[in-house]
Length: 400
Image 1 (cartoon, helix red, strand yellow):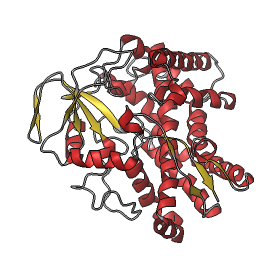
Image 2 (tube, one colour; image 1 turned 90 degrees about the vertical axis):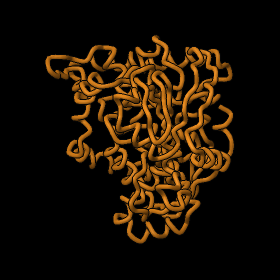
Image 3 (cartoon, rainbow, N blue to C red; image 1 turned 30 degrees about the horizontal axis):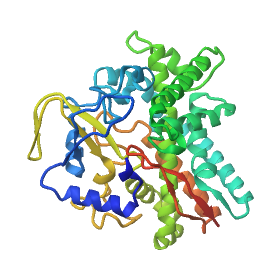
């Protein structure tokens, strides 16, 4: 875990050397207090490997022990974190069909006005500070948190509760969220999951409740309804993933603009015209989710390397988005980069990010407001999350 707290230049260099190897490196698993230590994993760091593994979910399984953790997920964790992201088809497909109706481009367009109003109010509050604030907590986190909570039908009084529990669940081993005693991390994670599941059950029981919770509670697909456990896991996945990853993309985006004034100036020349390319480039370099895990269901050869049934592989999206074989001058922030086949929303296949349309819209609107109304805003030195899973920024002072 210490590696993920090292300076970013060291991380860049380490993954560059891994990509230069003849075959994926194999690593031992670190010991964690809440799961047995496994046999290790292959680190897939090249773009081509991640695309091929993503396109072959019948070989590279998400459901064999979980996709969001290196050790196999303990049974007690599955009750709260056993969502569709940790499943294979056909169960994964069944659950995704139920919730995907709320995330189509047509449905997202219905929320456009809400996104614009929320972003405008956030910038109003930013300007009211007079000179700056913690950009992560006061700007970047507020828009995705409000939108996903509004979509779910969560009242504003619960926003802070959702934000806090999301930080615990995705905080990794960062002491700000997990505490100094690693032996209690499992208890903190399970408590956060239990509390979020309790909230969704309370909201679902309200017959007057509107939003996605009500829709999921009554969803009927081929005669089946979501179980209470499935509803709870869905809720945790959506509220956590629906605000954490976009929050980090927006935070990284401001830092990228601060460090690349030429690209800021270019974007300011045509804010709407450059927005699509700029947003994709922000997501490429931000890569909010560092990796997902897969487990081999059978022996398989891929790009010259033989993998055995039962072995684990980690799909390092963060590294694939910097692969020199795919991206010219990959560390350069270029809002006109084309093509830009990044895997910031995951690789192709059934587990591609369900909320990608919504995330793109939120990032676009947030930066449109910032560039139009606070064009000189800059982000200071980021306080990075100490996590192998999330490429997060916890705090970052901004100034204007």
